[in-house]
Image 1: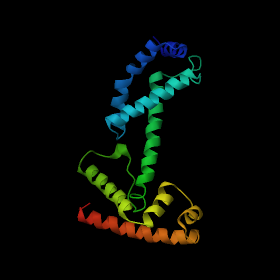
Image 2: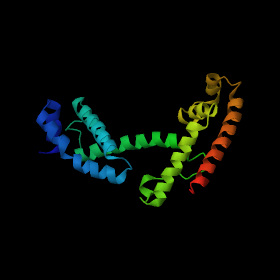
Image 3: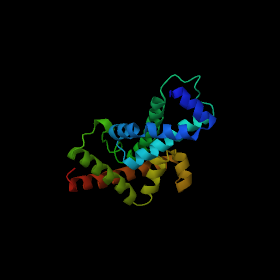
Image 4: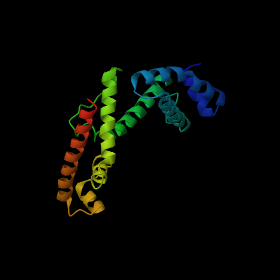
Length: 193
């Protein structure tokens, strides 16, 4: 059976074809995403389910038809999965940005990491930075979350956290970053990272 046949049958509501296709690419999908993305089996299962749902919805809604389809369904499914993983990584990097970019640490591409002691040290270093943000205390914790995670502007943060103006927010953010940097550097030294 060709991919075009699968699309036509799924569009008609053929549940057997739907189930067959669901299982057809699952093993290769898991192997590929476990190898190319630094995610757990549970996360791959979630990505597969989300990718599959997106593909099935596009077939059902007529956005993906056998007439217009010129790539393999497997390729389409993997691309959807890749896009989902990249979107999740962007969210994660936004959170990690507080601990990595601000302290002038090099952002690391998942494919560049060797799974050795170096990787463990990097993960531990990132965890220290994130835990420092959690324990830094107020007003720094709220201010840094609003600025770096929620991506809010100084004026908006000033209104929400009762600062005089955006300049006051900027000055407080600088003090908080100095405090955060000091806390993280102390922890890095204690842990020989």
